[in-house]
Length: 331
Image (cartoon, rainbow, N blue to C red):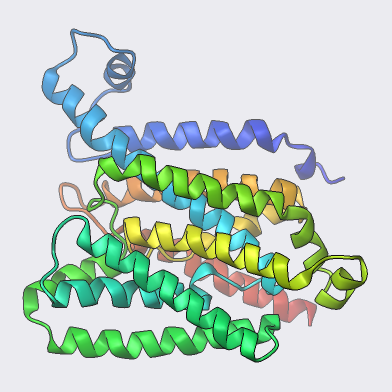
C-alpha cells in the first residue's frame, strides 16, 4: 500500500468539505470575519441582523446547494468511468448535459421563466436524453463503446436544436440561457434542497449498493458474466442512478463541467480504484471542489459573479490534457 493510500479518507475528506464550507461562507462582496461567521452559526443573538440574514439565508443555502451538486457529479463521474471502462468518461459524455440544456432553453423560449419551470424542464430534458441513449445503445447490444457513441450522437443532436432555439429567441431569454449554460448556483431556490437531497441520496445509495458489480464490470462484461453477474440488470441500475444524479445536478445548477471527470481520477490516484471507497470519496471531494470553485467565482470579480462552470473548466481542462498525456505515455 502506498503512503497516500494509508491516508484515512473518511477523516481527511470530511475535514476538507468543512474547510471549503467555511471558505464558501466567507467569500462574497461583503466580507465578514471568521469570528462573526462562527458566532452567527452558533446562534449568538448579538450579531448584526443583516449579517445573520446574509449568512443563514443566502450563503448557507447556496453552500448546501454547491455541496449537493458537487457530490452528485463526483459520484456519478466515478460510476460512469467504471461502467464504461473509460478513464476519460464524464457524466456529460452520455448526452445528459445536452438534453438538460435543450430542455431549459426550450422553456425559456416558450416564456416559461418561473423559478421552477427552467430546472424542471432541464431535468425532463436530461432524463429524456439519457433514456434515448439507453434505448439506442440497447438496440445495438449495449456495449460501453456503443453507449459512448450514442451519448455523443444524442449530445450533438441536442446541441444542434439548442443552437436553433438560441438563434430564433429574443435577446433576454438568450442572455439568461447563456448564463445558465455556463453553470449558475444562484438561481436555485433553497426550498428545493430537501427534495433534491432526498433524490440524490436514493440515487447514491443505489450506486453504492452496486459497487461490487461495478468492480466486476471494470474487468470486462464477459468476465463479470462468467463470475455470475447479471450484466444487463446491473448496467441498467448503474446507468439510471448515475444519470439521475447528473440530471438533478444539471437541473439545479446548469452545466457545471469537469467535476465528474477530475474528482474520481484524483480519488483513484490517492485511494485506489475500489468503488466501495471511490464513490463516497468522490462525493465528498466533489462537494469540497465545487464549494471552493463557487467561493472563487464570487470573489475574483466581486461584487460581480463569474459563472462557476468557468472556474471548474479552468481547472478541469488542463487536467483533461494531463490525462491524455498520461494515456499516450502508457500506449
